[in-house]
Amino acid sequence: METKLQLCRYFLPGSGARLAAVRAGQVYDLTASHQPGLATLNAWMQFVLREGLARAIELLHSTVSGAQPAARWADLLVAPDANRPHLLAPLDEQEVWAAGVTYRRSAEAREEEAHNIGVYDKVYSAERPEIFMKATPQRVVGPHAPVRIRGDSFWNVPEPELTVVFAPDMQVVGYTVGNDMSSRDIEGANPLYLPQAKIYTGSCALGPAITLLPDLDLQPGATIGLRIERAGAAVFVGETSTREMKRTVAELGGYLGRYNAFPAGVFLMTGTGLVPPDDFTLQPGDDVQITIGGIGMLRNLVLGG
Image (cartoon, rainbow, N blue to C red):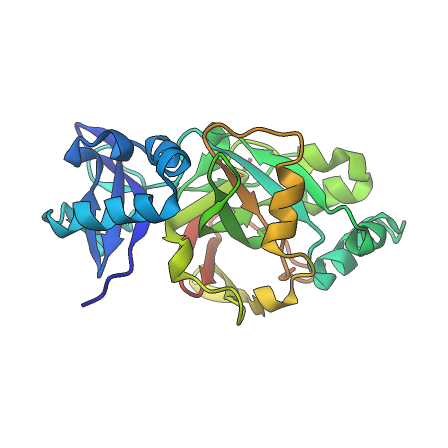
């Protein structure tokens, strides 16, 4: 019997957002258990903080073992609709931060777009990593919801990233898939424009679920795939591995948590090793599919500015 569990959030008409566990293609409504530690993701994060991750995972397994499925996973893989159940982004009160230039390919691409001024090469080899605020919860979209491209940008790309989920005490609890949407022409004009290139409504997608720490081993490297379809045809396909990351998760988390507090926990996107060619830009209607081994696929259509 499959025992691997993932955490997700989904919308239930008439009830709103629900915290759920996913096992063997079935979805179990944890909120319906009426246990204080399972009401929301933040409530579970507080349970992790009080009781430890092992006990928090035991709580998930014991709750699921005595419950009936509330939905089939496949039935939730639909666009947001107020009249039918669908997946939400797997966060509620958590901020999303991001690390940049953690892959050699990313450093090269950033240097090219910034006309080889050297700043990205320097941070790639520096002791201190680049870490920046990416999104507040209301700027994040979930699976099958539209990501946006800016109306004042002509060069926009998705950035597929392994995203780490940290508890309030900065211990890793799991991983999900992230899309760090970026306006390359805006950042390339001046690196100080990075917040405008990276932080706007619909610039961040997360999902489909959180794979808990014991169930994803990064030691051999997790495969990250990106496929972009336009009018049903692939216009970009690429693949990389977390083996190519220059920084470790522990290193990035250590810098993120320095002199910073995250009472509800925090999500950290770990950078991209997949960059479409310079002559590529997203267009409204494009279908962006990001897959990470051991987690799943995050799929979003592109909406114009």
